[in-house]
Length: 375
Image 1 (spheres, rainbow, N blue to C red):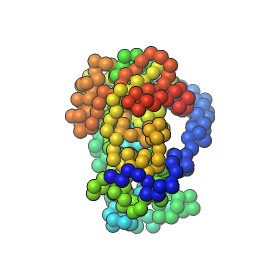
Image 2: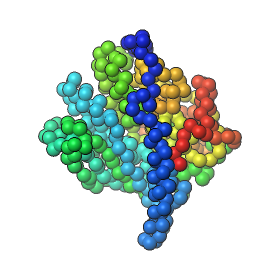
Image 3: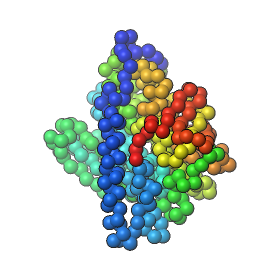
């Protein structure tokens, strides 16, 4: 595997330099959440109520009486641009995997609150009607979307396919999914109210970059000698490695419930990398003692972008796709359940009393309370 940048003079490349600046984006998210809070009373007119603790979490939860409803909307981001570039180079469509990526962005967020996914709605906004004229590409998107829905046990209800010339670039498509789920029985809700010292941190493996960090990955291609076709491992090109479909973790969380395991908290490790382990507002310390294997493409990105471990782990998933915070006595069973679903997993750390911080001991990295501001 290539481990050094092709241009020795190339400096380090951060996520912010690739065009994504969370210091600008996150304050708007916080402002929007505070404005949205003022609308919570509208639910009362229907006899329902929001679950206040879900604000700032990956999915919004509403109490409808006998059970909870959870909802989320997520977009794919720029991974489709990589699929387009690779299609031009390889002559094949990559949109079956791109469809799974989009579903995973929504479903993997929804399940963090203990919800069973029920239905998905699609939003496919093209830069013009001509995008849909490529039948092979369009049908790959349809088939992949259906297959991903069935893998999660979720119904595809419909969606919207606008042609937005002048808003979306010609020849491109912006993909998003909205997902609704049910928390039933209510005891399945996992918003961190039971999270505490002594809990184990179980990390589910990532298989690549998933659908976060692609702005950095695309910027990096400018430095590579063979571009998208540069090898990151024998027989594996950079473009193909980036396009590995994001795992769907819903089968794991459903299997955990069937096994009698209710996580105390969950985190989908997407944007902000391992800092997402600090998502819950409680003042607790998270000590990581065991790291998952890092996919070859992420090692490659780190080396080519000349990032130190702190920068890499604050931006990319670095092998951890999803975190489960569970009672210590359930930790190994949690791993066994995930493995039975074909997802690698390991007991990676422990929750401790103390200031809010994340300690990644094998790498001597610490992220403090100020590392993640989403509320």
